[in-house]
Image (cartoon, rainbow, N blue to C red; front, side, top):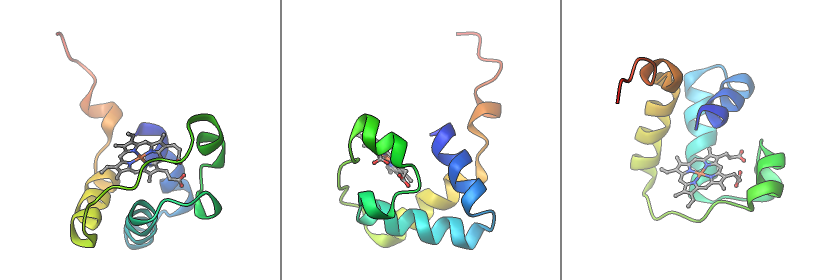
Length: 77
Ligand code: HEM
């Protein structure tokens, strides 16, 4: 997820573009529209998930706004 977030931030620095592209892509994962083709080649295309567009946008906003590396520093367990 850290890598996906970084690739997306590089390609779509603006929150709106990021959220639009990610939610559309996850709604219909396609190799042709992937911005992480090397990952598709390595792991195959991710599965189709039955989230509606509203949820996908909320998830995408969360991914845009969350620094996952930061939040995972300092765990002691
Ligand atoms: C809410 C849940 C999820 C979100 C928002 C999400 C989002 C994404 C995004 C944005 C990418 C990169 C797209 C690109 O290539 O441009 C990706 C890649 C990937 N995801 Fe997910 N994903 C989710 C759940 C899952 C699940 C449940 C699996 C596996 C069971 C999975 C497996 C993969 C794999 C293997 C890739 C790399 C290959 C590819 O790009 O298709 N994802 N995901």
